[in-house]
Image (cartoon, rainbow, N blue to C red; front, side):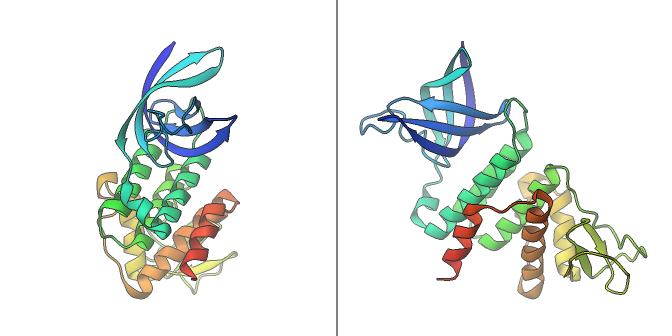
Length: 245
């Protein structure tokens, strides 16, 4: 049986002499594991479409539980990312998060769309990569079912709380008693969180934030995602190591 689908290449593993096993993210079928035969040969016509972070249209042959690429056409390769090691590392982190939050045979077009929008913002616009990262993390963890409560302080009802509890995912006031790690939250960072969680995904990265408020948003988004998923990411570690150089 032949299947045609558009997919983003999240991971590639060398297999045998010239093949690769790809993990790709589709809107209709969730994650898929497919074999790209001979893709590592110099003259392979599949090479471009099967690169990491390439968004391509694949024609896949399925037989007895195995999927093999028959044809592949590149839609977008995000070439700008491959010229900047720091942006490429950040894009790889986006891919790893997307893989963790997706499953095989579980359609999730929103995860694919947000990831593609993040890659576009990172490669095609002049937006601050740190803010792109923060918006991606917060929107993705909400999509995974961990939407934080940011409308008011959950203890006293204050509309402008100044702390965010990363364990419970709730906004609180510094004077309200609570357990767990609470990170500083200003009016600016709170407004940005509310925007990220409620805006149309096409406008997800259309906001600006500077100074301490931007740092607060970045700290909260990353810490909240890692806390709720209860894991780290090797790609994030590499990205952060580059920023220290």
